[in-house]
Each structure stands twice: as C-alpha cells, then as structure tokens.
Length: 150
Image (cartoon, rainbow, N blue to C red; front, side):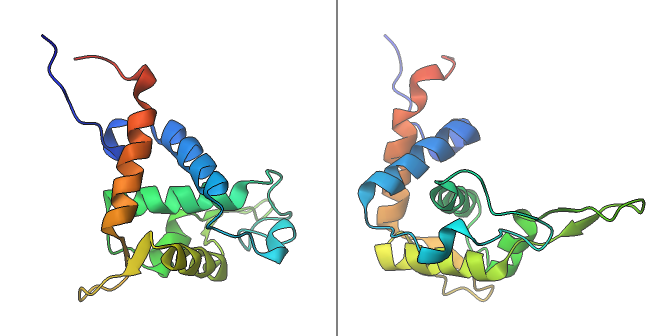
C-alpha cells in the first residue's frame, strides 16, 4: 500500500508552481492590473518593459513563493532578489536592484486580496496569511503530476 505524502510548495518545481499560481491569480479576478503595466520597466538596468503580458501575475506569484519559503522579507530584500546585472560596456557588470515601487505596489495589491499581511516581528517585512498559504498548498497539489515517486 502506498503511503500518502502531502505536497507543499517546496516539493514542486519552482517554474511549474509559479506558472500555475500566476494563472490562478489571473483567473481569480481579485488582483487587478494597473493601467501602467504595459509601459513600466521592472528595473533601472532594463531598456524595455517585459514582453510577456502576464508578467505582473508571474512576479506576484514568484514573490509569494519567496515568502512561503522564507517569511518576513521586506521591499529592500525583494529588490535585491529580483535585480539583474547592469551592463556597463567594456567595464565589469554590477548588480542592479529591481524597482522598489513595483515591489511595493504588488505587496499592497496582495494585501488587499488577503494573501499577504505585514509582519509583526522585529525584522518587519511581509508574510503570508493562513488563507494565502492554504491556497498555495492547494495549487502545489495540482502541480504534482510529474513528481518522482519515492
């Protein structure tokens, strides 16, 4: 008899989970796209806005996954995590941070939906609510089609 093993977000591939959760956020119609989503750059080092029209939902899903794995992450840490390299011609590349206003807007939108809340710890930052964590576990259960059996 096979043993039942509950599946969480950490057990699923990051790419599969983020794509599935982004589709869930888009179909849920609670998270509204801002009007400037097609013209904003995601970082100082970028030349153009993202080509994918669903990039806002993908970024929100990736931020939620980061908060699931490690709670109490603030806006400054998100800008470092989602930053990119700054190309400087012949000189060496440097790390460039992502747009903090964009991270803040996504966090506020997820707070209005009820997925995130401000953390009461000394560190500060944001954390997932119980309903947000439950939704993410349910979505991770849908991604288990290609999981290896142990």
